[in-house]
Image (cartoon, rainbow, N blue to C red):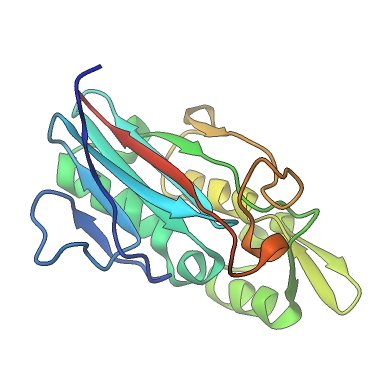
Amino acid sequence: MPPLTLILPRQVHGTRICEATCLPSFPPEADGLLTTTAGVAVGITTADCVPVLLIAPAARLAAAVHAGWRGVLAGIIPEAVSAAATYAAIPPPELRVAIGPAIGPCCYQVGLEVRAAFEKRYGWSLVAPAFAADGARSRFDLRLFVGRQLEAAGIPPSEIQVLGPCTSCDRAYASYRRDGPPAGRQLSFVGWL
């Protein structure tokens, strides 16, 4: 396989999406990168957050997004779809998405204030399926919510694939919730040759 140049951002749990080949600083401070340049791969690292990889085959677009709950609440998913569509001049239904391994609702409890913040921003109908009451906390299916946001942004459900297990349950994956600061990281990347 020919070599790829891999570009990773300095992730900050925000909503900034950058073009990988026109960066003001390196590494860029962003939670998403996109490119249409052959030989360039864009990537992100995760240890429970959701890796989201997008492609548009006709435009040869590749994008990688780091989606932690703070970034998802702030709107990184609709921002990524909008940035990809604008950058490559394609409609969202032409995007194909892979949602990678991340912490699952079996292991991901959040405070009721997190659920309330999501409900306030996105409304009950979008949020309800992703949260389940668990005493004074809620279990949060972040990957399910990301998938619902992708659908709401215009990507057909048939073009959204959820891959991999819960990172906290499966010791083959790095998990910050399970292992704390020494946890490793998963690298997710995508690009075109």
